[in-house]
Length: 238
Image (cartoon, rainbow, N blue to C red; front, side):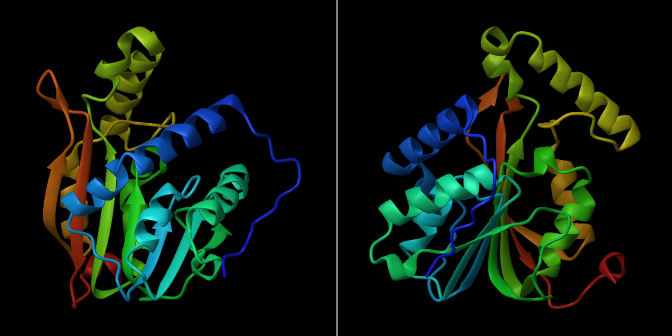
């Protein structure tokens, strides 16, 4: 049965509420399941880890495949608390509720080659170093296992110019600095999906599927990638 992760002084902000509401709206509308289907993700009888699980909507979708093991990790204790309650309401019987653990990239509390499937959606824009984070995801993945990730491309801020005002400009500036220095100054730094694919190749994962849910002015807003871990480990990971 899933574990509730309770932390002291959790602050339920307006942002947490809005994010959770939107996440479960997408789950109810079948959007979350469609994202998994687009990448041909199958969790049946597999050991599955969702990194950056947030309020747990993806875990609920994955649970319908009856995985052998289902674990969600997130750095935000408030999301884990919300997630446990929402997941318990959504999954029946409660014995299938996944385990929730507070953890974050680039250090995951699992042994090498533990999972058959690792999902990590909309987390890459927030990690300090893409290669370090992807290498850690690959570490806990079994040879032949599947990694599914997504992130925001250069078209993402264009959808929110009016609502966010200066934030898109900040995101573009941070992305230019990241491209030149390799350092991320703010959360949600934009990335090139081609660069992510190159990193995956360097650390021993073969990209099987690439998908883009929308382009704005010819630029990818959000990318979705599925990759398979090779049976041999390249020097970059040793």
